[in-house]
Image (cartoon, rainbow, N blue to C red):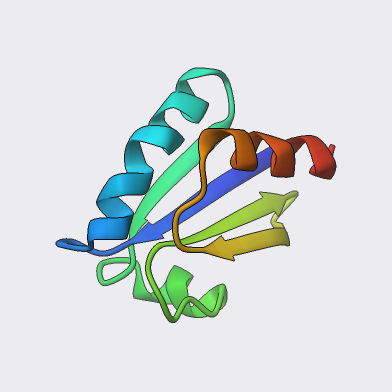
Length: 84
């Protein structure tokens, strides 16, 4: 099963724009974890996060895909489908 890690920062306009989309995806059954990159520095370093938003797709603890910036719900669902 895929888990999505959303690394965001406070007062980041793209992060704010992406959150409702990820909330919808979470509400439809995908595990989504929202992580403030400044408060979760150890995890952000583990995944090499340098920009926000960074969205990391993880399967069994291993990164299988990532993107930086904002994508539509359809684009994110297509990524999830490709990773199945």
